[in-house]
Length: 256
Ligand SMILES: NC(=O)c1ccc[n+]([C@@H]2O[C@H](COP(=O)([O-])OP(=O)(O)OC[C@H]3O[C@@H](n4cnc5c(N)ncnc54)[C@H](O)[C@@H]3O)[C@@H](O)[C@H]2O)c1
Image 1 (cartoon, rainbow, N blue to C red):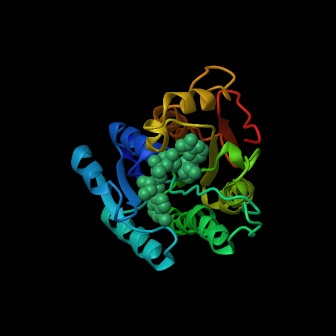
Image 2: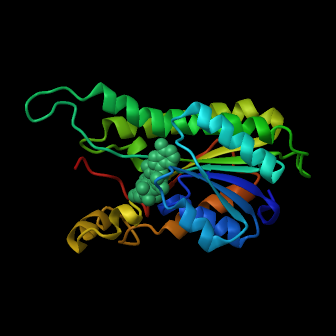
């Protein structure tokens, strides 16, 4: 995939990991549509980045909104080559609360709906547009990168819903890559460890140090730009397909 002429949809692109991907795609010469909540910083981000980025306010859990947003971008850009799915939420709750109350089914469903169903919905709509692209020299028509988490493999206390959603993303990566192979569309997933996004930027130093201690080497949190660099490599490297790649400095999350 030639990123310099690419037309991308990045969900969750107004903040953190998604924003770092948007910045790299724009710097490489691509056009990017940021799919993020109306309440997000999407409008300020595109003001800063200029004409190569557009903000499309949409909730990835609203399927009609997703269909409209993808159709709008396909029309405005004349097609879609790349889709990176970073939109996600991570509320924590234990299976049984302090008073023995079972995990809220509404909360469980909400996390699955945004993280897993939302990712799937944006992917399927983007893939339908990519399938109409003229194939590149190797027959490639598109590249999709999803974002899971190391919590897909070793979820911590309180992460049942989050881990289920991210495990679902890991699980569907290979079958979707197989489904889309005949169309020349690759599908991969990145599973980050603990990254220094706005979520953690304001956290006390002791908390950051304890989280960084999980890393084997280097002993620090991951940087959004390190994530973005990996995503752009995956988009550009034709031989990576159907894979989930950990980005975690060798760390394995402990139970707490
Ligand atoms: N930060 C980490 O340590 C870490 C580690 C592993 C995985 N992840 C995953 O990476 C992704 C990005 O996380 P981040 O740390 O950059 O978080 P972030 O909160 O900085 O960014 C997430 C973005 O997603 C958007 N978003 C949330 N719900 C949405 C919805 N329903 N529709 C559209 N947009 C929505 C938010 O508005 C925000 O702009 C998430 O999927 C997260 O689970 C993060």
